[in-house]
Length: 237
Image (cartoon, rainbow, N blue to C red; front, side, top):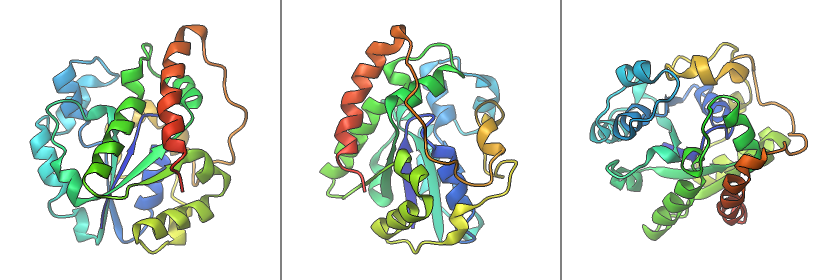
């Protein structure tokens, strides 16, 4: 089984990759379109040069690899994707051949977390609009994509991951609930900038607290993102 997990940044996406990567039967890949995205947009993300050197910059090459041999000849292949990477020119037909899952998180949490790592935060950077667009496209192809909320996972990781696995036809494994500290061998090179907290973890954090305050300057971004979030939230497991 090939599982494409779609989220924006700061969505519990790395912890989810670690959960699937802890399974002995599952290979993982970390944001394979990141270099292609930076090459085409010219965005000056942290570690831009290192990222461009670490991955193929041709999105067609990336898409071919996602449907090619699974690393380690494992029976399952978990692909962590950022929705904002799927810009014009990045192929999508390969998505017809995988099981698509959409991971959501409250925009206030995403914006607050992202703003601590990246100075300029706009609606295009956090992936909510693109996530809704990809979801609609997958549905139009006749698939029944699954939506899971990071808040629900943190409330009860075992139960929610078991529900997720059942929804996609994958047997649940308790291995998914624990992983070694220090990162995963499949981490992207950018992990040293973004993954500090999850590197220090060995499992999912506890339930989330109160929503953070969003600076007034970012309220328009929050307001727009909330519309997409509420639409997706209504469809969660």
